[in-house]
Length: 307
Image (spheres, rainbow, N blue to C red):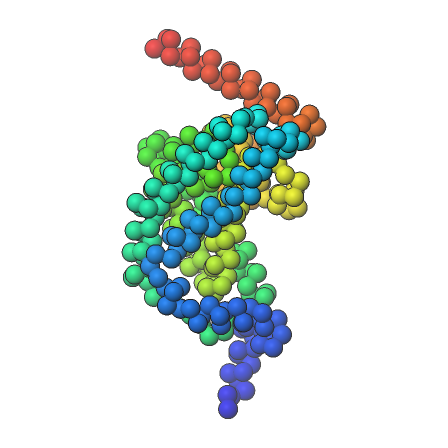
């Protein structure tokens, strides 16, 4: 019979096993039974790639519908309507770029990491309270680490050229471009995500949900649509697609990936005129950005002529 002290310790750390942990425990027991499959060295990279493609697919459908249903253009942030063939070509080109980088860089690096790590499969699942708290802690820590790394890449010229410039080839983003970056940047983001989960010391279930949310939030930030059901509409602490699109358009500011607070605190926040853009079906925002683009292009041309 288990001592009372041990039972109290288990109760305090994991909650009532017959109450708030019942569903998570059933899920965790099912996953633990597939331990050999879950420890495959190739699973993390393959899973990350296919989940990214799967979560991007609704936005591909959305863009395809926009070619036949003009009402969808109302939610575009800064891209005009384009033929379906051109839209699909952009997606196909981006898909192959990401696929090649995963095949040549992420898959070997992930397999090497999986072969040397010692994964832990605890017997008990976390309580719902611990589960949610660990996921939120991972997101907040990743957001802070990414802000520092992203800011550094924009401030250090050789870092920008060697690591981050490839991602900014997409001045107007769409969902798939969330992982359209250089191999070095993709690896660095994996390291930041794994570091966040390690520092928090979260349960494998919490870590899995964190990685899923991390992927979805990156896709939503790059989707190019300001949708009424987007997370930043429900929770204003998130920046969302308008927040990140401003960064891609101006190449500075809004360095945090998901939340707004670090850019507010550090003076790098770019205010997005969302209301004006929506009031006129996005046309006001596009005109303003087009004028800025033309102005910057003229400055660049003058500098080129002088040179």
